[in-house]
Structures are given as structure tokens and as C-alpha cells.
Amino acid sequence: MINRPIKFFLLFLLGVIFLVVSYLAINADMRRYVFTRIVPAYNLYQIVSIRQHVRSRDFPVVADKLISYIDLAKKLSSGKSQMLLGVYDAVDLAASKAITQDDFNELENVFNELVNIDPSLYKARVWLARSISDSSYEDALKHIDKAIEISPVQDIAYREAIRISQKTNNVQLARQYCTRYLKSQFGGELPRNYRNFFGGTSIRNFAIQLTPTTEGNKFYPNAGIQLDDDIEYEFIPVKPVDINGMNLLFSLPSGTIAKISNISFYSNKGVKVIPAVEFSVSSSDAYILEGEENKLKLLLGENDDEIIRLRYKSSIYSVSKIVVQINFSRLPFSNICQTKHL
Image (cartoon, rainbow, N blue to C red; front, side, top):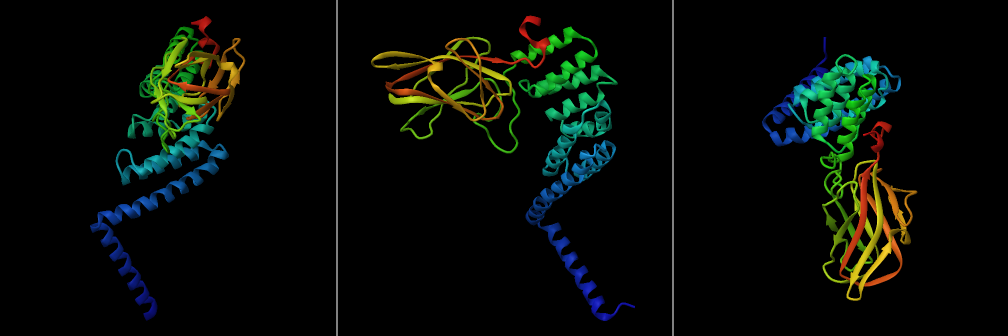
């Protein structure tokens, strides 16, 4: 027999729960507020829960947990949602540690569910292609092609296509994907958590910032990058300025090479042409490679946003135009993709 204080407490608790549920049912703003606070915590819980099984490489359990997670996300909301972002992060964690074909086979249903929820997920397409490549490489290549349509400039889909080509001993197919990769410039994936210099990763845009400058943080952009050719990229300051160098700003995919020949400074005294190797160079993430004489060869794209700082030994006065001569190219990720093989 429940004594009276406990009975009153239970009735009070039920009453509070009823009032809270009723309030949430009629107040959409409050319901949205509570949901947006609970979902991130639940997403974090799922990541932690799945991580321990990923570490032990127990992919059957990982797959079951991910399917349950996806089922709940589908019940709570349709299409893209805050919970779907958590699902994507959890699947990304699992896929990043999958090595063998068996690992990917265990996760096949997970990848398929993710693609069904959002067909525009680039990595999900590539993961699904990897998981079915042993049973139907033709269907796998269809997903690869779809991923390339979504984001032509990224290399992950091309790498999977080359792996499939190796497995099927189809060198001609590999060379076709190599050609597409080396010529691709558009359609990089937008960073999810921040906006980079140019709102996305592609091989079309870069900018300069003159130093020192009285114009604050003014950038001068150029959207005319061309691959595999020495191009003179022109920048015109708002007014003539005295400078001792510049910053070059890039948001390029990994494996991009920029070979800078020289920089020309135009003023009322004429043109001063300075070989790029005469500048001192520092960067946020780039690497300097051995290149041709009197040319500065940089490996870019290790980070979404890259700053190359070029400084000259003395100031250059009353500059009204700057012309930077650069040859942009993409590094091959397979010897099949080297130019001599194409």
C-alpha cells in the first residue's frame, strides 16, 4: 500500500509531466527551443557510443547502432535536419576507420540509407560505391559519377574509381577518370562549420592583399585561374600605393601546385619585374618544392584557407597595377594519372 506522501508526490510528478508535455504541444517556439538543445547532446552521446566499437573494429555492432540512429532521425524529422548532421558525423567516423572490403560490406546498408535520405551527400555516394564494388562495380561507378557531379574538384571519388579500375584491370577506365580529375576546377564542397575565403573549394579563385596597406584588410580577387598554363593575373589597387610585398590567398583542393615565375609592379616610373624567388616566403600550411630556376613552386591545398606571404627587401613606390605570373596545376595521385601515361 502506497502511503499518502508518496502518492501525493507521484500525482504531483505526473501533473508536472502532463503540463510540460501539454505546453510543448501547443507552443511551437518552446518545442523548437527544447529540441535544438536536446539533439546536439544526443548526437554527442551517439558519437561516444559508436566510437568504442569503431576502435575495436566491431563493424557489425557499429552498423546496427547506426541503423537505429538513422531510424530515429527519420522518425523525428524528414530530409535534412540537425539530427541528420549528427548521423553523418557518426557514419563519417565509422567509414574513416573501415579498411577491408568486409568492413565496408558491413556498413553497406548504412551508406544506402544515408544516400536515400540525402542523395546530394558526396562522401556517402563514395562510401556506398566502395561497399558494393565487390558485387557490382558497374553500379559502384554510377555512384562515383554521381559524386563527381556533386563535387567535381574533390579527389575522393576519383581515387575510388582508380581503385576499382585497378581491381578490374581496366587501365583505359582509370585514364578516363585521371583526365577528368586533372582538368576539374569547379564544384568543391562547402565547409560545414565555417565559410572560407571564397565560399567553397574550387580552382578558380584567389586574391591578393597588399602589404603594408592603408586600406585595412582589402582583398583584390581574381576568378580567372586556368590550369597548366603560364598566366599573368592582373590586380589594380584603388589608388597607387607604396608596398613591400603581398599576401596571396587561396582556398584550393589538396594537391594543387602554384608555380610563380615573377611579379610585375607598374608605377609612373615604369615597370619593375621581380623574380618570385627574390621574395622571402612564409605560409600557413603550404610547402615549397624544388622547381625550375627562378621560379617559386608551392604545394597548396593542405588546408581550406591558405595564405602565402611574399615580402621584398625594399619598398616599391606608387604602384598602380600588379601582375603575378603563375602556372596552376594538379598533382596526380596515381602513376596512371601522370601526363606521360594519358
